[in-house]
Image 1 (tube, rainbow, N blue to C red):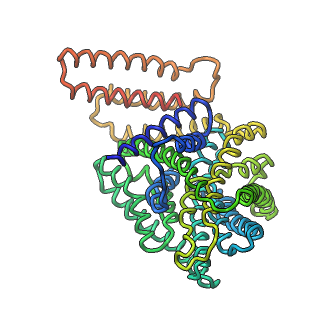
Image 2 (cartoon, rainbow, N blue to C red):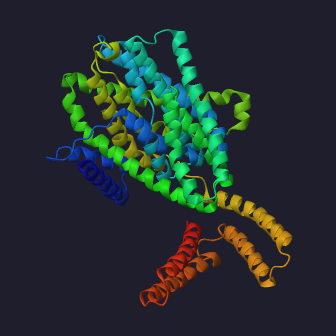
Image 3 (cartoon, rainbow, N blue to C red):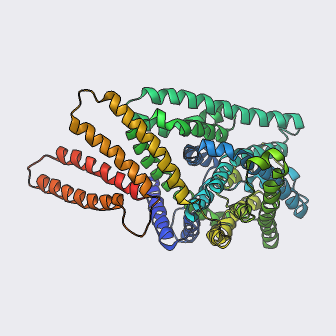
Amino acid sequence: METIVDTVVLVAISVVGAALARRLGFVAPLVLLLAGLGLSYVPGFPEAHLEHELVLIGILPPLLYVAALQTSVPAFRLALRPILLLAVGLVVLTALVVGFLVHLLLPAVPLSACVALGAIVAPPDAVSATAIARRVGLPRRVVTILEGESLLNDATALVMVRVAIGALTGTAIGFWEISKDVVVTAGGGLAIGLAFAAALAWLHRKIEDPLLDDAVALLTPFVVVIVAEKLHTSSVVAVVVAGLYLGHRIPYLLSATSRLQMEAVWRLIIFLLEGVVFLLVGLQLRTVVGDIETDMATTLRVTGVVFAALLIVRFAWMYPATYLARLIPSIRNRETRPPVAVPTVIAWAGMRGVVTLAAAQILPMPGEDNAPDYPRDLFVFVAFAVIVLTLLVQGTTLPWLARRLKVREDSSAQDALAEAGVQHAAGRAALEALDEHADGAPDSVVDRLRGLVESRGNNAWERLGSQDQETPSAAYGRLRREMIKAERHVFKIARNEGRIPEEVLVRAQRELDLEESQLQRSDD
């Protein structure tokens, strides 16, 4: 009973914290983290301890899976080169640089342990970076690069952590053993992800009940991760590959009802998970600080060096990776040269989060599995401190930096023009389908459907027009919402007076709600 009450309290606090962050315009993860830190000093408040298995199997899979589902595969493919440079090259470089710097500060600590720390703090977080990027309104390609980096860098970092821990405990120290481990882990995750994605795509095509469809979708990331972990492959690669594969094919796999329900359910789950996990990080900070046995001067020195190294290495990597590749003629002819402001914003968007939290818990205790004596408590504290500092420093200043450098989202006019062109072609296809199947249908029905196609086409072109006066589609939406409100009130009165049963009200209300949500989508 206490566990249930504690869970409800944490969820409630995370909801309130997220609402407060939105109202104040702050980054929600940072607000919740600070709230957790403050609550940890409240007498009698439950202590929190996140096991790495819970994070890697219970929290991280749905976060990565939904991010992969929402990622545009064509855009991902076009940005694959910068994504891989960040997700693989930068993570490896960061882990090595941080590892060597920490080893210089603490020469008695094995280099493998220091590299493990570097790998733990290397990957930016999928949650905070993309959430801030979308809220700030960065260009679509920048958002794609940040999303792609955060999807793939987790796998690179976790593989490096395991390799470094293997070297620390003496279980994997040879080059060929390490190479084999990396290939088997990543390749196995890729194969498992593709196999499950193909099987689940077939299953979704066979399912006709939206509730079953959504239940299978909810189970997917957890099943994929559990199987990948049991087979000792990369669960992160597996769940990302499955998400990219299924997300690209969702319009052909799920019914409209299933897609609407699944989107709403996933949004709620991700919202709650993101809030609770950062709240728990804050609650653990007091315990982490209390466990440190290293002297304060050394702790602050190591933390400062690691944080500075993360910033410097990311900037030092970002500019050559952006511009040197464009010296190659084929790339130069295919891609435009971005202004310096773009790689600057991407370099600054390096907030750490869930993966750093989980990977820090993987570090073995001294003496466990033949691990030598090393300051594990210090390394765990540094990992937590990096999460706090990156959210505090970069998370709060990224919106200001993007505005200062004038890095803005893509023009809505371009999107509206592209939509209008495709809508015109879609309208022609719809009218051809109507003509093909209209035999025997009443003329009034056919005329009404033709009018609907014409109205949608006009709405698309209206978005290109002047914003100074109300467009016909905007007037239609405003007036129709007032009509729906009046209709809904009449049905409620009839139910209250006993003239219709509850079932009739529910059915009518569902139809009105669907129409109103469609109007809201048009407004957005």
